[in-house]
Image (cartoon, rainbow, N blue to C red):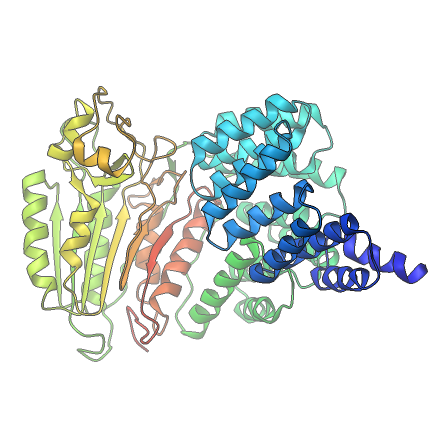
Length: 581
């Protein structure tokens, strides 16, 4: 009997997935009632899902459903496995059956909302979370989860309102304090972020993530010893934590101790942690890129601590971009490389932008200095001039190995389509978009003929200053997405640009990911341009790692308010370098 109890205890615990799988397997060897076996198969399936072994997880859920087709959670958890496996249609079919079994179960709507959220259907996710709240208004988790979607839509005030309500419903809701702290950080208020993180730790003093997030805040504030102490605490409560090792490495870098930084990044790579969260995966990528940068022998950039409270919601202090010296790599090492660099500033219908001319000049000079054979610098382009420049560049790309376009200026999105905004655009009504702006797809086509890689970099995710009157959506846009969609600078929040899908050897790098705006720099250059210029000449660092370094540098400079994002991939048969070693 004691052995049986131990089997069930191991099967029911949720922290050690291998132990959970072993316990459930042992329990299945002696458990007889079909309904109990169904529950054990479901628990083992959950552990396998957490280990990302989706095929075996689905086999367990199949067994559970065969044994007890009325057990709700087998359907719900199999839906999650289907989605994470990339089969959303089968996930929704399982959720439909779960809703049929219990149409008033708030958790079914919550799980469906999570699925919509992961698919990027944020409005549908909001609707389902709202229905879950209607069915069970006292449950704080639903407010917390809906707030996460508001965050991704860039609506930080609504997110805070939901976290406030979650805390009112459950004053000990650790996640609500943690997540509200993140929103305060995204709003540039590190003092209020820290206050929420302190409350989080008082409620749950043994929660590893509480110390991790507070450690990040201390690092952003320049309080390095306190950051290291919190990362140490994280490791006490979560052994081998990859984010904690990476956080320590980033902190030692800021302290100028590259030897200890390297040791921490190596620990992150050697970690056997079973935590496969997005934070862990992201931290691992950061550790790999930092090790490559340290191995390059290049002097690492100095990134100053962020202010405790941002002076502006749209800008951050930045140093002037320091253009790298001319590289000494052999001519032809990377093949023929060409670039078109555009800085749009002097808009005629909205206030001018201060950073793009400086950013474009710094990027163009950097590309020339690292060996690009041809770099065309263009400023304040009208639509006609922009189209002509792209046409000319397409011809040049045809005889090149690399083709790169860098654009700084305004960009907007309508109906899932991203556009670059020329300086003569007025956009009085939304149908003007196809006549006055240039779609990103046209920019991508200009690079298409390059023999090896195509690269587009957009520092264009700024607040949208255009306020056009809505009409019916243009026909081309209506085909791409919902007819009548309002012009916005981000598909989900009215700010920035929408996600893009690219194929072939193509990378599209946005200065800010979906749900965020690209901040202006108060020192003449944007934080994105500063990061690109200070990393692009790092010798011997593969191009994907370079953009990871850019992402991390921007995160450090903005205290996590702005996170660049890279779409696309390059063929694995060859590595590409801005500067070969």
